Amino acid sequence: MKKLFLFALAAFVLTACKSAPKGESKAAPSQSPFKVGIQLYSLRGDCEKDLEGVLKALGEDGYDGVELAGFYQYAPEDFKKLCDKYGLRIISAHVGRDELIKDPEGQAKLYASLGCKYIALPWADRKMDLPAAPGYNFYLDDLRKISEACQKEGLQLLYHSHDFEFENYKGKDLIDTLLDDCGKDVLKSELDTCWCHVAGTDPSEFLKGHKGLCPLVHFKDYVGTPGGNMYALIGKEDKGGDKSETFEYRPVGDGKLDLADMLKAAKASGTKWVIVEQDEPSEGKTALECAKLSIKNVRKAFKKL
Image (cartoon, helix red, strand yellow):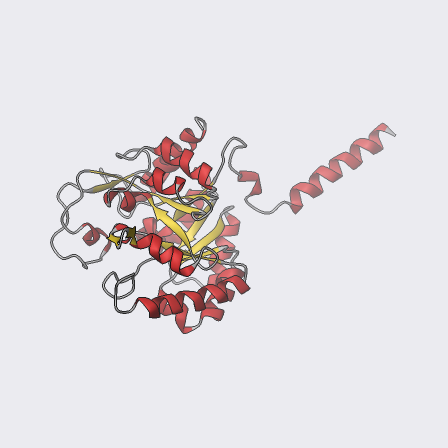
C-alpha cells in the first residue's frame, strides 16, 4: 500500500510538472512584486544576427518576457515558438499607428495569438498628433478605433511616452490631456522613466499620481546632462542638431535615476511588468552585457522592497 501511494504521488508530481506552461519554472522569486521583461529594440542588432541566441541568453539571465519591436525576418508563429522554447512570454508589442490603423482588427488578432496583453504606440508626431496640434482630433479617432479592436481581443492599448509629452498646455501636461481625452479604458500609459526624468518630471511622482494607468513601465537609465539632439541616438532627427556630448544611456540601476524609489512607486501604482530598455549600449559593453547588468540590478533591488 505504501509503495502504491508513493507511486501515485510521483505520477501526480510528474503530471503537474508537464502541464505547467514553459517558463513557469523560471518565474520571478516569490518576493518579486513584478515580472521583468525587456524591449527587444535594445538588442536589435543582435536579434537581426542571431535571434535564437539572444532569446536563449535572456532566458538564462532570468528575464520573464520580451516586448516586441518587429519579428526580425521570422514568421510571428516561429518567433513565438522560440520564445516558448526559452521560457519567455511575449508581453506586448510596439506597433506604429499607421500599421495599426490600416487593419486594426487583423493586427489585434495577430498579437493576441502570440499571447500579448498589450500593444503600445511607440511614437507620436508632436507637431501633428498631440494636444494643440492640428491633427489631434484625427489622432484621437484613430486611437479609439485601434483600442476598440484591441479590446475585442483582450488587449490594452498603451502610449509610450518620451519627453515632449510632458510639455505644459493650458495648465496640464500633454500626456495627461491625451489620457484624459481618450479615457482610461481606451488608453493607458507606458511610462519611460528616462524620458520622463529628462523632461523634468520625477518618474516616481508620475507613477504615484497615475495609479492603475501604468501596467507596463520602461525602466531606462542614463547619465549626463540632457541637451543637443538626444533622439539622434535612436535615429529620430525631429529636434535637429548633433548628438549630445554628455547624455548617455546606462544599464538600469547604473545611472542617475533612483531605481529603488521607482520600483516602490510602480508597486504602489499597480504596475504589472518592469520592462528594461537601453536604446544603445555604453561603456564598451555589448547590448547583451548591458541587459544582464540591468536585470541583475533590478532583481537585487526587488529584495529591498
